[in-house]
Amino acid sequence: MSPRTPQQFEEIRTRRIDQIKQTALRLFAERGYTNTSVSAIAREAGVSKGLMYNYFNSKEELLHAILEDALALNLELVTRLQSVSDPKDRLRQAIEAVFTHVQQHVDYWRLFISLAFQPAVSGIVQRVLDHMPQAVIDFAIEAFRQMGHVDPERDAWFFAAALDGMLMHYLQLGSRYPLAEMQRYLMVHFVDSTE
Image 1: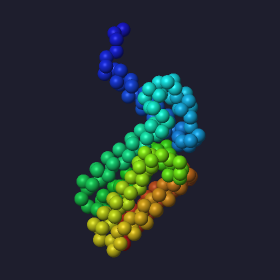
Image 2 (image 1 turned 180 degrees about the vertical axis):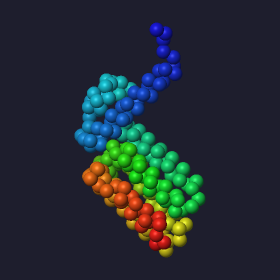
Image 3 (image 1 turned 90 degrees about the vertical axis):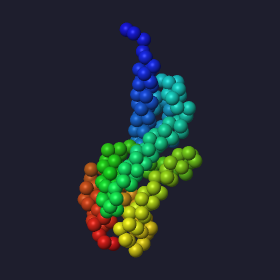
Image 4 (image 1 turned 45 degrees about the vertical axis):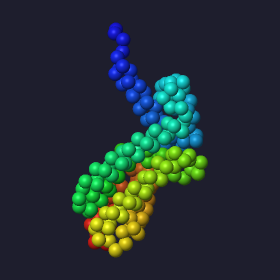
């Protein structure tokens, strides 16, 4: 067997980091951030605690990496949607994307919701959490302004509250929540109406 190449070592390193982040995300979502120890993450990820500290200096740094990944996904979506010129199409695609993302990444959303209500969340994590809701509001204000709404800011806040409420109910109730029906209602109320 020949020695590993630097590229192979980098692939192994990347896989381990992803494995640790995915395990931590699941445990943070299930148990809560404060109730999840570094030892539990390492054990569940199948790595030593020392190896985990080789990649992340602290549990907070690991959480920050997870949230930065999520923020990057959200910013990618916003960037993609900005290229859609028609504001109704842009808003429709945003709603579809958010509902799909929540269904595919339940652990991310459970983690966000739990962290939003923890006063002890650090400044670094808080910066990431604060950015996402403001991005939604700014996006909606611009879409509603372009659609000719009388008060686009009020409508954006109402839209965000409705979206948050629907998603929180889905996270709480799972398959018992009529998510597809609520998505259609959101489309009718905010995209297809003339205000």
